[in-house]
Structure formats: C-alpha cells, structure tokens
Length: 133
Image (cartoon, rainbow, N blue to C red; front, side, top):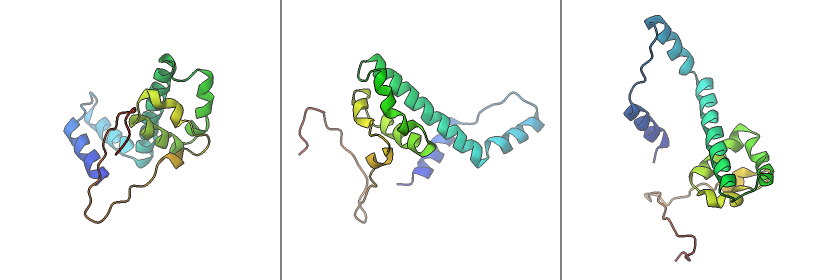
C-alpha cells in the first residue's frame, strides 16, 4: 500500500480549487502553496483541528474532565506528537480518549506494521465487549 499514491488520488478526485484572482496572482499562490514548508504547516493545522475537536467532544460527552485535558499537554506540544495523536484520534472513538493519554511518549502507541512478503495490510473491527479470537 502506497499512502502517497492514495493521498494523491484523493487530492485529484477533489478537483481543482477555483480562485477568484488575477492570472499573475494565481502563479504566485501556486508557488507559495506548493512549498513544502506550507504543506507541513497546513498538515499541522489539520492535526490541531482533529485534536481540538476530539478532545472537545470527549469533554462534552463526559469521557474526560476539563482537568483531564492536562494529561494531553506533552502530546500536543510538538508537531510529531500532534501527528501521532491525531492519527490515533482518527482511528479511535471519543469514548477511548482516556486511553490515548500516555504522558510524554505518544509515539509508543504506534507500532510499525510488519507484514510477511506478499501479505496485505488489513484490520478487523472488534466490538469493545467481545474477546478477539
């Protein structure tokens, strides 16, 4: 699985963004918006929004308390930690918010997928109250 190819396909499927600016301005915008630094900044903003929405929902639903937000401080302090936490939040229900607070080492939650040659990645949803078998 090539995530870059998947992301590129999705981006192409969205179609072009139409900007109501002069032709010369479009070229300048393409240069600025296409820069690697801007793309990194933009991804970090997306991660921040995911974290903000997830934690807000967790507090509103009573899964964590406002005081419990402090447990996420280390995980939101750096760009890499935010990327890791946002990924976990996308893959987790809000009810699992307490389980995502792991102190200073958010990256420990992610484990690289090790596949046998020719094996395809897959996952199975298991209800919380069932025993995997």
